Image (cartoon, rainbow, N blue to C red):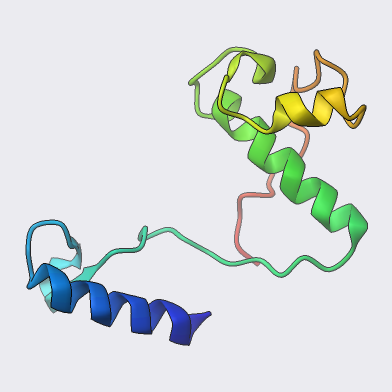
Length: 104
């Protein structure tokens, strides 16, 4: 992933020609980036881990205060998972994966 991100960033910066579209990551070092500074990667290890990742994605809009209930976020794949029977419609009344946002 590091090589993919590095190649993409170099190509993007070349096209953008240093425009303001490229965020300043660490101004003291003169670094710029197109990636979120807090981005981290996680390798999914098994089915239970995959479920935690999906739960985390579905819980995120409520966690960050965009909605009160997970079901209220209209752009979520949560609605499709409810139709498939993976979740109850009222799922997400509490954080299903506390601490999961921390990198390993």
